[in-house]
Length: 562
Ligand code: ADP
Image (tube, rainbow, N blue to C red; front, side):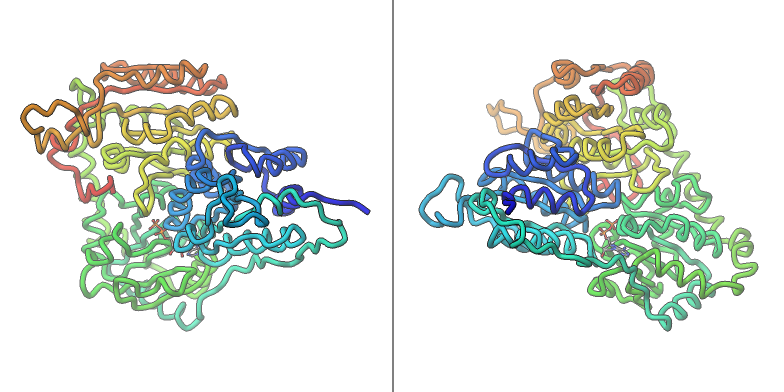
């Protein structure tokens, strides 16, 4: 009779899911899970802080359209994952967090790192439960993966007591669930599809909003086809970019306010009308909203919806296109000649022009806009950008393009600063074939800067860029409020002239520091070349601390850079 250890059952379950990479910090009682996993060809990535494990795993899953997995020790290691669970929950990303805990047999006796983890994750996960026996590990694991990726994706927390992980069980006592997941792509009610198609075909000023929820449906072709069939302009949420390339002629992100105010029929796909879209209040009061979402509860939230199309974005878009077949002749041509598209194009062009002086500014300290412009000139179309920090997000949104699906990752729905570097690590490990560039404000960089060492150790040649404007939002608190007399300590302004690039040098990476705008492009090119040769690079760019204050027109909302 063969016996299997609980930790091995966890690793076997991960393997059965087809997961190739897990993220974690090795430590009791989960170190054996990582060991068994690597024996099975699953790659464990050892990060420097558990928060980063959750961020990297979530990004890895987002970039690959898979469930991210992290394996976490116990006690404080698990509490460090709360923010990551919140990020995954708020951004609807599938993530399985496997957290260790003290022995079930010793509950309430003060065992090492005993923590009541399960309630801690309720409210920020789709499910938070403790495994009750080693024999049932495969059952709990299948349930965790099913919940994480079914319907609206999200995080799941599984608590793993140490005595269950170390228990030996008879192989024949273990039941392996089969057929525990359906890959079905739910379709919308055909009557609703008909009504939505009618509205879209008869709209005078139609518009489409693409959100990051389309990631899980991968409907890039259908989104493009629908836009082109109707001559319908589109804009995206901050992470919804790239599913249709930013340089598509119907992409009107640069006329965001006009598109929202002017549209008479708005098709929202995989986005929520939450704070990011001003709760739908910026649309015209009589605009008709058609909302595609896999989660029925989302329809009608914050703003009255004319038609709710509940289903998978890919499946529903196909339904819409089928419904419109043979009925759309001339619509796109009329749109091309009509006032709606031309007014948006005019606005997008004039907005673009108004940025030009900033993009090409020779000012010193370097304007953040100039930095962004040089970045977008150097890196190729398939680059994945992670962007983090307030001014960095606000300027990056306007300047950095995205042309491929899931190639834009940022602070997301809960505006979590600190994601930029671990997101880049997860993204590069997910897709080693494409350049990954992580642009971070110096404040954002500070949260997880140590993860550059993870990148070096795990051969993830990323270009990390620090928008070094010397403090939080360039230290605007002190600039705005001043300091009480005699009070010398800086709160929002950091120690001057920090050379963040020296950190990567210490790890064995390639370092660049730039203060002159004309030096930017060659430095970025050298950094990019270093990554092509397998080195991690960091470029410290000393920029204008008062970027937003000295920029007259920042076009639209700058709350958290959106
Ligand atoms: P964004 O920040 O880009 O606006 P959100 O994260 O707020 O995006 O919203 C994404 C939405 O996408 C969620 O309401 C989620 O239920 C939905 N969603 C997730 N998967 C799918 C899918 N396969 N098809 C349609 N909608 C989806």
